[in-house]
Length: 117
Image 1 (cartoon, rainbow, N blue to C red):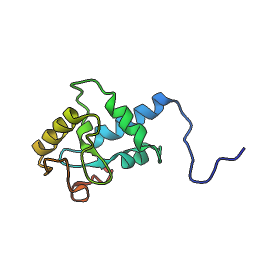
Image 2 (tube, one colour):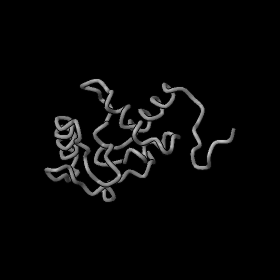
Image 3 (cartoon, one colour):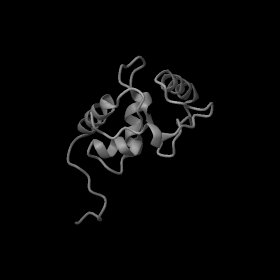
Image 4 (tube, rainbow, N blue to C red):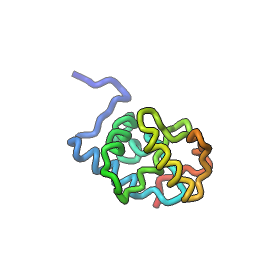
């Protein structure tokens, strides 16, 4: 059976996906942003931005990984079901010089990471 065009899924396990996502997020420099979809694409798993969010939401408290640099493609800090995490994310981004309004809105394009180190 053929898969529909545009739904190419790389071979690998969920652990491979998680490792690829974490490796991309670890490379995002301070003061720069990436969307969930951008992280998925750079990790080699296009069309999986929601799964990127699930990986990041499962990180342990106090992780040194810069999870706070990943935001929605619409240019805001997601807060549905996690307002306390959104407040922390806003604070961390502001500490890095990224202007974020009190509702979590920001200018993604002005601070978008190009995927290069």
